[in-house]
Amino acid sequence: MDSEKRRLLIEASKSPAHRPVRRVAPAESPVTPVEHTPDPGLGHALIRKERYTSAEFMRLEWERIWSKVWLLGGCEQDLREPGDYLCTDIGRESVLIVRQRDGGLRAFYNVCLHRGNRLRPEGCGSAESFTCQYHHWQYDLDGSFRRIPDLDTFPQGAPPCDGIRGLPCEAWGGFVWFSLNPDVGPLADYLAPVNAHLAPYNFHKMALTRDLTVEWDCNWKASVDAFNESYHVQGIHPQLMWYLNDLDIQIDTYERHNRYLIPFGTLSPRVRTPNAIPDPIKVIMKGAGMDPADYDGPISAIRRDVQKWKRTHGAAQGKDYSGLNDDQLTDDYHYLIFPNVTLNTHADDLMLFRQRPHPTDPDRMYYDIWTFELVPDGQAWPERPRHQHFRHGEKSIGLVLDQDAQNLPGVQKGMHSAGFEGLWLGAQELRIRHFHKVIDDYIYGPGGKPDGAL
Image 1 (cartoon, helix red, strand yellow):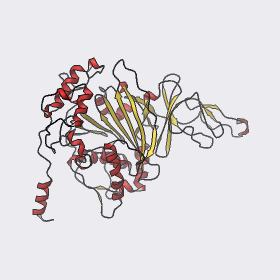
Image 2 (cartoon, helix red, strand yellow):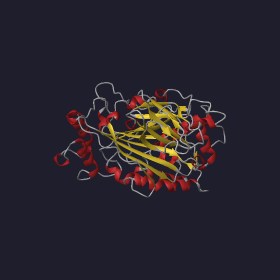
Image 3 (spheres, one colour):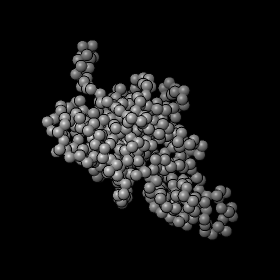
Image 4 (cartoon, one colour):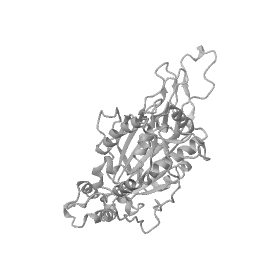
């Protein structure tokens, strides 16, 4: 392309000029930092496509990431009483997490030591013990042997251990976490600084309202990428430009994790200000208890006025916003907990996505959708939703997520094209570049990946 054509392309493609949204903290020091982290200086190199398609890279991820780090297991609200358990799969492994009689939590491999049968299918339940349905070997809540039928017919005796191998397990933020690595460090150290960032949100007061697992025909990282940038809003989510400012994004990167802060209750600079309040912004106003019909201010002031309204009326509504700054009352503080947990964090709700790899196929994955809503003080909690598991296209998962789901199989197919070499990332996609930098740290070590490596 000659220089003049390149100049014209750049001029035609420039983002609209916009005035950045002011980010403010409450009078006291905020618990959730708002400071912008320095540019990590990760360069502009191509991210090779084979990372998304290669069985060899999938093997490296399993050996050096999935089997080494802390992983999200499930919701602690599913483990209220002794004997309550949840079973979750990750790659080729399955893990049982169980509330113990002393109130603690234990995790162990979901496998019978006799012939390898899994003790429980994926999901939640309650039990006094775990009995293998094949030959009725029985295990206590802590995974120890409870009964082996006809043990006297085994000349070698019982397996030379106390029971099923245990795994590290801890709770944080209303969630339970596990690791396949017996030597993993403390969960608090792994999550830092995100655990401190999210502490003021009332996750323990939020009830699970949606629990879905959808099989997607794409690599798990393609899904992480899709929720790690706002650049695609103007592409496949045009309706959101009447709801959020997709250009005024603060991106922050940390040792493992990253985030962006995106203003809600406002307009994208890509659209003209309408004569009436857009319907999506009316939803935000009504959720705060405001009547859009009574509002006579400019659309540009709605975001700030919603914040003021919630600050004034939250306590009377049974909602404690005291630990949140004003922007957190409207905006999306959007975090990636490496490697696979995405949190759309809001004052009144949480949208959490868990992206899990397929056991054998780099072109497939499992996409978990968990949504939570803040239960006002004094109100009864809703009944837990039934878990649903289906393939993409069998059911709608909502307009925005349907748009992402429809797009990602085409992304994955394109990754296999001889005409495509890899990801060509811009500044709005810094979180994706940082995500791959952390992958490199785990797979190749902090010294960086060798020349020629994927």
